[in-house]
Image (cartoon, rainbow, N blue to C red; front, top):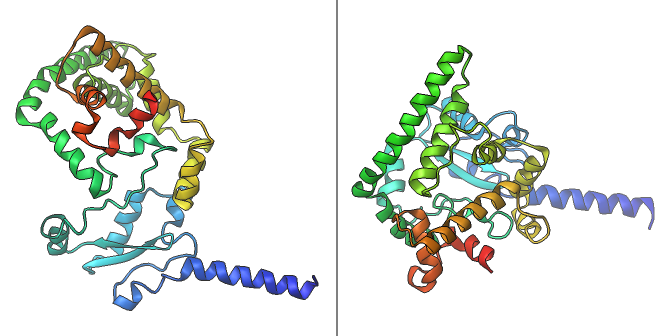
Length: 297
């Protein structure tokens, strides 16, 4: 193969890739919807993918830039995304025509990221039955029962802050509220005393930090998930689960086993998992809990 053939082949590949990544870029223009100009392969999220700006800040930025427009057309890589600003349109999407717009647009990864299958990301087929099963946990009566648990965590917070005041040192408010939130969620949702406030070396808080601390491996996973979701799902069969995922699943399984052995019932999230384990057909194939069967098998 001569240089000319190699050059032609390279040019053909480049043109094919360019067409693949830009074939949808006239979608909003042809419909008369204003929006920023996308970049091949990255769409309008270049700065987000390079960690120069958060998704929320970017959306706020274009919201202000196109403040006189009822809607904005952007691209997530090559996928058209419509950002609504008109209140009547937003009301139609969220209420009147919700059955048409029920999809979250967020991919889930059963193998690579089992905990991604939650209420905010599931497709309508699995989201609806999950919402029906979760609703009884958040009735006004259940929330009143949780108040005493929240109040107990608040008392612990007051005692902890008194100790901090005695030291007369600067307090990192973000870390303080994160510890309190960890204790509240652990007590109300899982019936577990996290001790994030009283124990500086709390394993739960350490894992909470790790879950939100950016590392090069975590960033690599995120980029792979964003750019090639199909490849990311396949990687779940090769790469081990993250330390935080394994830790929290282990905690849930051990808590369920403890309650089963000691016949403890709290009518909370953990008890729902116990019921699913006993009667999977009764509750149906709820996506949020599919990772649990993977752990049990």
